Length: 634
Image: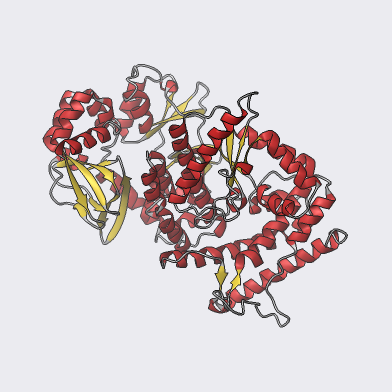
C-alpha cells in the first residue's frame, strides 16, 4: 500500500512545477519524504501571524483561499487549486505565517518537509529559479498594503464589478523596456520592482508586447532558454488593451475571451496602467478568470466536474452585485465554452487527432450565449469533405468522438437534449456538404420539422476546431435565406404562435392545474417570442451575430422596426432573463432542478407592472409581424 502511495506521489509531482523540471531519481527522493493530509472544508491550515509553515503544501485535490485580516477587514490574496502550492514564503522566512490559508472544499495536500525544499533550492537551479525568479514568492506584506489601499478607493463590495472603473484599481506602476533588452536584465527589473509584468516597446516607442512571470517560467526556466536572448523572443503579443473608463466587468470578459491575466490600460490614447486578474479577485473574491484557469489546468473529467461546481456561487455573487442578465449569461457562456473545449481536448487525447478538420458548434441558447444554468446539450459537428474511400472510417471516428463528449458533458451536469439534437446523433454529425443540403432544404421547403429545426440550428456558433467551416456555413445560410419570403413568413408564423399570457382584464394567464398550477412559463411565453422575432429580423437583413442583444445592436440602423423599438426590446429581454436567472438560482441553492415556471403573485408590484409592460410590447411586435406577413400566416 505504501509503495502505491509513493508511486502516486511521483506521478503527481512529475506534472507540477518546479518538480517537472527534475530527473525522475530526484523526484523519487522527494516523494519518499512527502506525506499526505486531508483537510475538511473550513479547516484553517495556516493562520496569519501564527507559526511559520514547516512544509511546502501542494494541493492534490480541492482548493484553498489565502487571505489577510486587518481592522476587521478581510482581504483575499488568492484562490489556489489542484497543482498550486502554498506555505513557501513563511517556510523561507521562518518567523511567522503571512496569511490565513483555509480549505474552501474538502482538500488533500502533499506536504514536503522544509529541509527537503531547502535542500532542493540549494542544489538545483531549476527549483531556485522557479521559486525565487518566477515570483511565486512576491511579498505578501507589500501586496497586502497595495490591495488595502485599492479597496479604500472603491468602498463596499456591492456592485463593484459594475460600478468600479478599470483605472480605479489598475496598477499605475507601468514599467516598459526596449524589445532588444536581454531576458536576464528584464527579470532583474521585475525582481527589483516586485512586479509581475513588463511592457515591451519597439524602436518607435510603441507597445508591441508583454512579458509576465508565466513567460519566464514556461519559456525561459522550463525551456532552458539562453537568458541573454532579447525579450522580444518570449513576449506575448499583441497586447490586449482596455480603456481606463471601462468597468471592471469588461476587463473580466476580455481576460476570459483571450485567456490572459494582464490588460494594458489606456487613457486618452496613452498607456495609463496595468490591470490583472489578481486586481479583479480583490474586488470580487472569486474571479471568473480564476474559475477558467482552474478548468484549463484540469487533466481529467473529475477535475472539470469539481471546477464547474463553482458556477452557482459565481452567479449568486453576480446577482448580489446587481449584474444585468446579459452580463451574467456572457460569463456563464465563456465558462461553459471552456468546459466543452476541455472535454473535446480530452476526446482528442482519447481517440487521437481527428483525421480531417472539424468544427464543434453550439446551438440554441448556448449558440446565442444565453444559457442560464446548465441547460440541455444542443450541439452539432461539421467536418470537412472526407477523401474518397475514407468516408465510413471518418464517420465512425467522429461518432465515437462525439459520444465521448456527450457522456462527459452529462457528468458535468449538462443534460442530454430530449430531442437528441446533439453531435452524438449521426444526423447532426455530418460533412459540410450535407449541412448545406440540410439548410437549403429547410429554407426552400419550409414545412413541419424544417421550421422547428431552423429556429434551433440557425443560432449556431463555433466553439472548437476549424472555425472556417462554421464561417463557410454561415455565409451559405445568409446567401440563400435573403428574399425567401415564404420561409421568412413561416418563421413569422412561429414567432407569433406563443401569445403573451395576459387576460382580457390585464391579469396574468397561469396554469390552472398540475405541477405548475398558478405559474406561467417565462421562457415560452416571454423570452422565446423575443428571441424568435429578433432572429427573423436578423435573417431578413443578413446579420451574422447570434446573441439576441448583439443582433438588436446590429439591426438598429438596418431594420425599421428595431430602430423604433430597440431600447424597449433590450430592456424587456434583460428584465425577463433576470427574472429567470433569479428564479433558477433560488431553485439550485434549494437543491431543486431549475425550471422556467414563475408564480407572478410572488413578484413585487413593480415587477408585476414591468412584466405586464413587457408582455404588451411582445404583443405589439407580434401584431407588426402579422401585418407584414399576413399572406404567409396560417
